[in-house]
Length: 121
Image 1 (cartoon, rainbow, N blue to C red):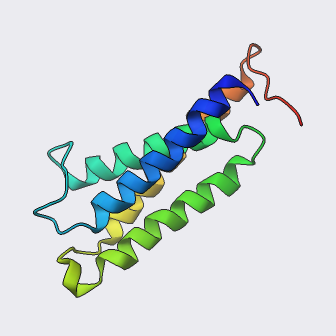
Image 2: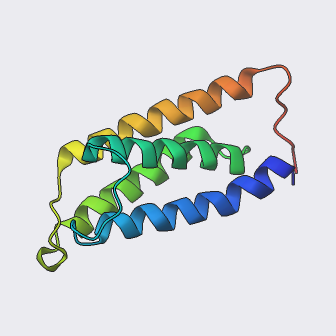
């Protein structure tokens, strides 16, 4: 396993746990890294897409995208639980998907570089 994979995989899981945890906390207690909720969603899912693409270089990008979109949907479904005092929002899910597409697009471009060679098992 290449060094970048060994670094990206645990960072991906840490980022995923942080993003999900922050998304289901009551709004008043959740950490905020940007002025807009949509920007926070985009930062989180762009980061997840990059880390997933780097951590699992042999995995088809469309599978990674579907998995991450599923995480975004799960967040919105969880936020619909009234006792969490959060608001489920389809626009948040669309922001997630846009960020996933952008992040995986960057991974696709990296994979086209002559210097990049996805190791084979």
